[in-house]
Length: 243
Image (cartoon, rainbow, N blue to C red):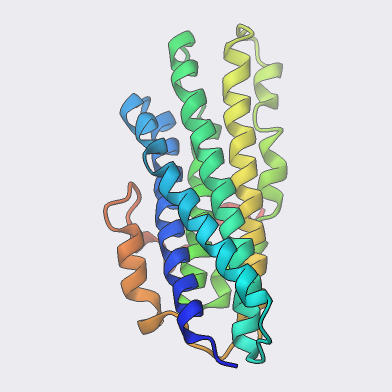
């Protein structure tokens, strides 16, 4: 049984969730990097809308589960839609947590921003963007790049070990917020890994061009106006992933 209409609705809902989640992540990372309360405050602006899209995807997937879906591409996409929705929701919540921790950190700390954490934020943000590119361009190589990065989130817990060995003494408050931000970035990196795995599961046997024009129009919609230029993505392969 072909299910073009509900599958198309799932596609639209995932486009919207990707846009909102990516924007929240962009703003939360830039809020820390630039020390900008304005970026941090804007992160929660679409939280309710994103939750509505997530609930809509859940409802559609549950309804489709009661039907006999015989088309392989439809089956696989329904299976991954819920995984992607959950990962995007968790990513958005982690971005909100980063935004909440950032103003508190700058209120109590006069220390400069930690360069390793800024770099980690850019890397994690790139992993999520690569997942979105893989999904909407339907090209497995981007998802495969993300899967090669699974050590990134494991490094998040240790990103500040060097501080403990340095001569500089930090207060308890200063020693709390940046590791909290690193843990949130680690959560996002794990979600990117899960999204990449789900996308590859779908692409490996899918012959359906679900996103028109190889996703170019969708990618423009997702990334135009965001903090990091979209044109940096299609050929992007972080050198640090190889280490």
